[in-house]
Amino acid sequence: MTIKQIAYIFFISCLINNSVLAQAVKAENKYGEQLYFVDGNTLKQKNKYGEELFYWNSEEIKLKNRYGKSLYYLDGNTVKLENKYGDRLYEFDGYYIRYRDKYGPKIWHLDGRVLKRKDKYGEPVYYFEGIPDRWVLVALLDLAGE
Image (cartoon, rainbow, N blue to C red):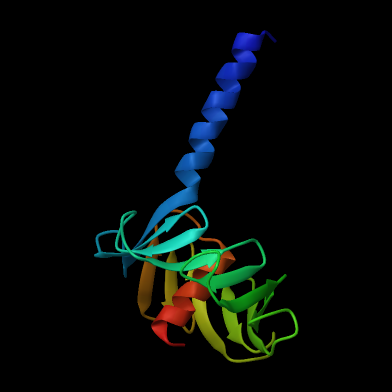
C-alpha cells in the first residue's frame, strides 16, 4: 500500500465516523417532527444549533455540558443514579429496558430504529436515524419522565 492509499482510507473512515456521530431523533416514525439531535457526546433540542440538554463522558450522563451535574452512571447493562454507588434505576435486557434489574417490569422496547413503550406491540415514541447508544436511550427516558 502506498501512502496515498492509506491517506485515502483514513479520509473515508473519518467521513463514516462523523456521519455516525450525528443523528436526529424524531417523533414516532421517520416522517415525524424532529425532537432532538445527537451531536457526538451531546444531546441537543431540535437540531444541531439547539440548546444542549445532556452530555455523555463515557461513564456518566451530565446535565447540559461536561461541567454539569452528574445525573446517571452507566455500568455495563445497569444504569445508576448520580455515580457508581447510586441506586439501580434501569437495566438493559437485550431489546428491552427494564426498571431496576433484569426481573423488573419492562418500560421500553427498542425495535430496530423505533423505541416503543412496554413491548414490541406498544405505541412508538421515538424514531432514530441510526441505532442509538445506551446513553441516548437513558437521556430520552429522563426527558419522557419515566
